Image 1: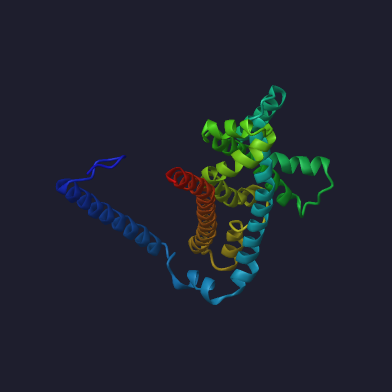
Image 2: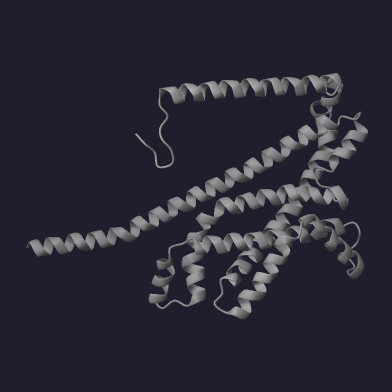
Length: 296
């Protein structure tokens, strides 16, 4: 029996796959052993370097939780601004009017081509030179500005690709019903494109959360990753332990975001299926009624 994407492996192929899996796991185990042995030789696995994260609550209340709060604050502000801005830019790129489509396209391509770290640094310099924003809040403003400019441009391309991926008949049917271009986009195309765009949008939201660390590296923003320096200075040069714990927090945060997005996507798909069933039921009833009348 053949699949659409590949041939179902036979007995010999299955044995080879099992052998490859065993070899890969063995190599992975050797690499893990080598890494752990190297860390042990450097005294990085000593209990005193890891115990503060379990026994000392101040590590969490003074460094990790406040840093996580700053990360979530910057990410939330960036997402709340970048999503509608990116959607507006994406719709602008689909405009029938050249005087709208061309400038919007130039803005999207310009900010999409610049590294987000450079946008953050440039924003910080602008805020310092031309605005009364205090130095206490300037890193947050710069991080959010850089993330919004870059990610709104990327989201604009996601929106444009999602709308263009829909069958052409969707828009033609709306036009045939007398809907204007704005109404067609708002009530017909965008709701259907959301489920298509959602995986790419979730990936971009995860990128936003991780990219907040760039502000801590060069702008002095007190986000989660930057707390490593304070923890290392106060708890005996436990850099590996601190990085490991921070990495686990990032993994848990992004896994939660991905899980919530998957639940949302599932509900959207179920809602569309339920709506389709409700729309086809009256048609089926009419056809059955017509057949019964014809029979009489």
